[in-house]
Image 1: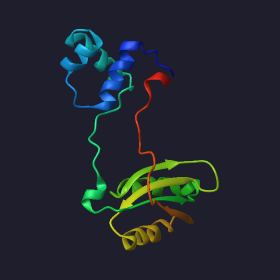
Image 2: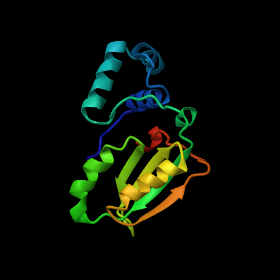
Image 3: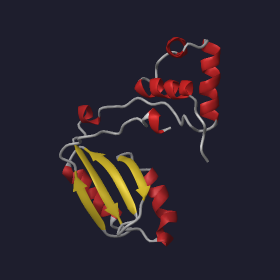
Image 4: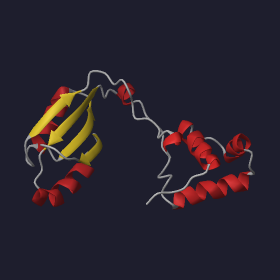
Length: 150
């Protein structure tokens, strides 16, 4: 299902992606609409699922989480019922996606030590074989959806 967004909606999305705490008043000034009109547009996009939420991006390195890794995991379809509740409970898991290819899951994790990472990998191997890549440096962090693609 595609959603039609006009130039004002795209500008509102761009402003919210840059700063989710921007006031409706400031958005209204940027898009030359009234605050109630902007609020209505934001509410419409929230109800349509275009805006899925608001969050603060936390620098995990400042809390000692210096180990970032991607783990490929082979999970059989019959194990997914057990695997999904397990993985959802692990706070170190930043993201877990079901993917195509030799492995069925791609898991992004953060840990304070390689010992903790190793322990977690051992737990994962209950579900199947793993392949782990530890990140040295991230050239492009998670970024906003470019509004020109909408």
